[in-house]
Length: 301
Image 1 (cartoon, one colour):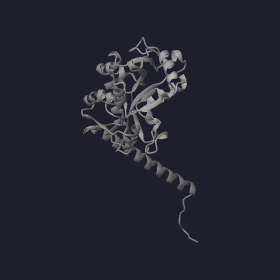
Image 2 (cartoon, one colour):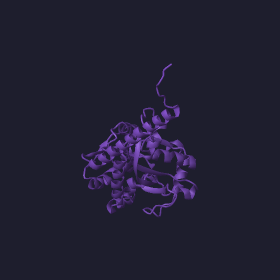
Image 3 (tube, rainbow, N blue to C red):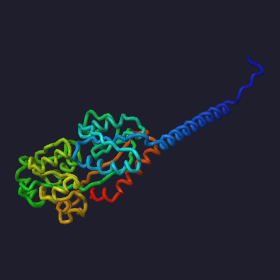
Image 4 (cartoon, rainbow, N blue to C red):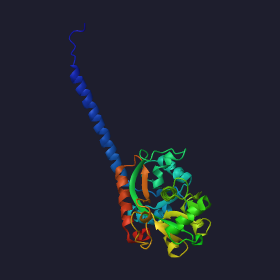
């Protein structure tokens, strides 16, 4: 038996241990906040890399090159576009997910970024856990377009032709897992047509094929084909949004003939997870200012 030694009650020991852990946690949080604020004060101190995981010439590339210079004006450091193309954007997203979360590596993504993990085997990222969202860049109406050589002038004529040709009609997309592919599948199921799908490696290659008459029809983002429509190189048959487009007010919606149909694409800007919140906020403000610029808004419209 030990005599004369003081023993603290178990309740006191428990409270002291809990208090110690609480103080340690508060110190860690305070340290993290200090480091985060310090990082934001010095940010950006060098050029910022913007990964574009799709081919040049498509909607994503156009959006990156429109907003990048405006963000540069706000941040005081250049936004450098870097192409990392492959597997419907998976290659670029995998790379961005593993980059240092310091605000110097960003990525622009399509809506397909969220569905790729269910479609491709080599996806190494979790779209929720591995990225910090910065901003929605654009939400765009898509349009069903045909080459003039197809010989149709409206949606009704196209559906009649497509049902007559069956899989003898080619329908192009920007690649497996892209919004143009998903919109095409929704359109196919809604209308009952059964064309043969032809995949291209990105929006740029798809547009070149359409304009050149290599393929007769596709559903694509409005901004990418608008000038070709105005130039008569492609014919708009219908828009996929719930309401008509202000750019093409004379063109009907698919939903007018097939109630309930709606399909739109979007682009977003992300950073690797754990990027300091003040840095994310700074990037959000820079992107918001870029999107509010009159010349950028005009070109997006």
